[in-house]
Length: 169
Image (cartoon, rainbow, N blue to C red):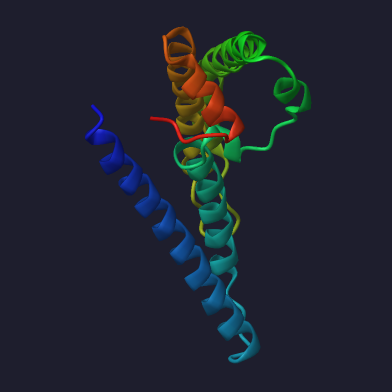
């Protein structure tokens, strides 16, 4: 299992690089067509927006570590390690349960969005937002994995990874 994780991380990073490169390339095409050719292309803006949506949810789900996300953790950092563990368990249960409970509703809503499409390319909004259920599922699984690590004998490593004090094993 440990040998598969670096391969998956490299793949996730590669997909993010492809999304960002495509978005940046289309941005340059739009700038060139607008200011050099004086003929703006509407489809480039639309594709950039879709790529941005995918890039944000992809990186949040698969690339950013727990400590990289925005958090308000002054109280968490001020308490003892044992209390941090309890707070982390409560937080992971709430996040995991909330995201897992919302997954069927999110899938249903994204499927419903196929009735709408983007204004220029007429791509169904179900495809535009198809990354959102993937994000919800990934966060729920990450919460479950974090709970498992918090329940193990090496829970201190998980707390350190959350606070950025040390890399997880």
